[in-house]
Image 1: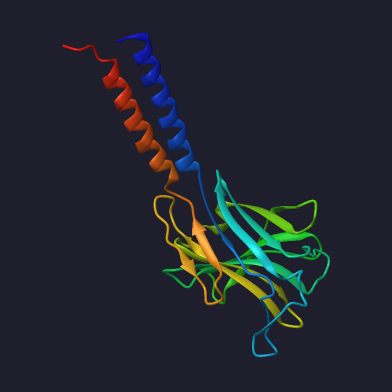
Image 2 (image 1 turned 90 degrees about the vertical axis):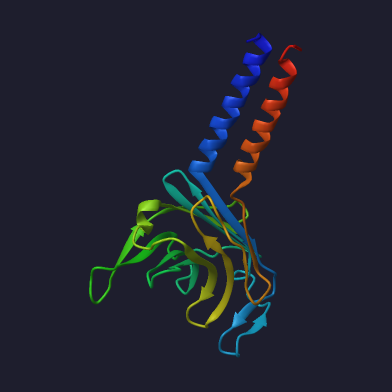
Length: 224
């Protein structure tokens, strides 16, 4: 085998390894939300533009190694020091009644709030997680261990929410189904909010890399 041929094979194997690693270790989906659609639940759910701190524009769920990362962005700023305001990712199993909440609230804390299914009445457990705020305070990113979600079987329905618990104002963005990395579905809620999954790109990359390698290898073969 020629030196050029060996280089091609080695490059292909590197691409294949990196792609397989990415496919196994990461998975994400995200959604965007129109502005001025915060619901006033005491006014028949009519929309209002008076609460830009609740007005979600973007949300994302991303699997990174042993963690799940949740990102939520609003129009004006995330308010972490108001006890009546919560920024929440509500997660519910499609196949069972189990659910879990990931929320960020006063005073600058975030929790994974889950029920223990073996207890009656249900026992709720708070699992601490880490968070960061963007420099302009419009975005909060929450990182939680995957083990905190072990009681809720996949696939999940995931909804990002920002709400005032006292005055009952709410904005929500229904995201994609959270499913194993091999497959993914898309959903759109009644307000035109969309969620778009991105798994599968790595598989396409593997196929393309394989075809390129085959073509180049055939070009290296001497004519008989």
